[in-house]
Length: 507
Image 1 (cartoon, rainbow, N blue to C red):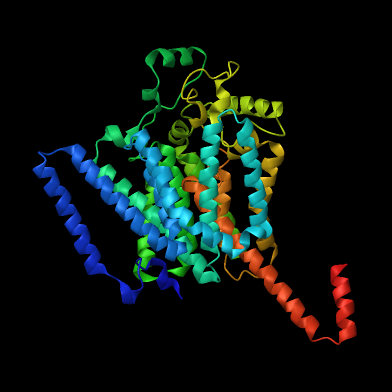
Image 2: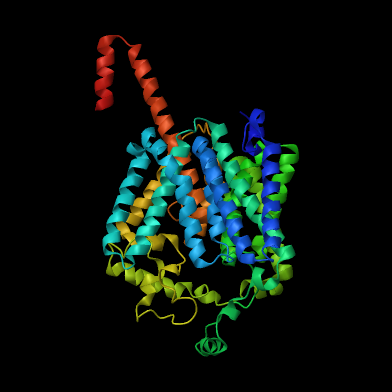
């Protein structure tokens, strides 16, 4: 297996039914168009036919991912992308979201259980974490929402455990990273089409337009403002989704960069450039900062002195540009209520005080902004009155708020354990250290200003879950290999010495 396999189509070469698939797709399009004309241009009938075709496609994809678990990564990532689209009605969104996840994840549950991984190491600890999350549902301030989110997180994690149980080497790792990158490439292809074909009223948003003039005036009186800059959101629910998919796509692309050559490297470069351009258009500063920090640390780690010289030169150029274009850049950097990070610091203060009121048990799994319904919450303006659907804009505070401080620390320990093990080793057989610097680190930094490192959910939380199960799998493989080597070495010793060595090992 080599790098050429990163971008293979769904079927092996000897069984690629390209002609059949194209014929079926063409017939489906012709059938729907014919139905549309015969029904007098009825959009409802066309939508129903499209949904039926989509359902058949999802079920067919589920059959494939059940037989080839690594492809479930692409399927689930695209599910999160589709359900983040603003064009979906909320009732349809719920059906598509949970229905698709169930179709893709549930068939893989037997594989996950048979693998035995859930009884070992970090996977076993994660099961304990989910069990505690289940207990919090009992007293959650939003029990139905907490239960739904827990069910979703459990299904996805079981699917990922089934997927990673099939990975045995570095090539398997890079195939999975390739699926993440492909999902991001599809998202930005959709973004390109939406930018070119859809009206700006759909693809762009302005924060001031979501607040009434009277409320804006009141906010100005108390010295609070919002950014009036227009932000690109494509067909998604907000600009932050563009930034989230950017940090995922760029991180995966940078990891793949050393593994591809020729036309594939050009393809990766084009996708990376498009993702970065759209991230700038969406005004996503936090993920851009995360990618920058991860990239700089990676350069220093990989290239040592040369990397230090490069980073120094880059810093000098940046300082020069800041001096030359300082006033123009300040207008951009100082937009909005920078002193409170657009209201975050005031909101975080309330979240922290709420956490300290229930530090051990929290308010229930993934309840998010449900605590903002309190009459003591100071931000009465803006999008703070949507209950559980409001983000607390900090993934670490979100875990502490929902499950309590001990559980939040336990979650962070589980997430970092395989990476600490990996970074302390000289060997890196699966080349995961670059994944840790170019993907994990930006994800964790992004989680400081948004709730992005969810439990394998969303455009960032899901790839975080993917790379975590891979890193933990590598840790388990190395532990097993070390144990096997010790047993083999002990077997070659004379019996009395072998007994003493075994006693020392137990001691």
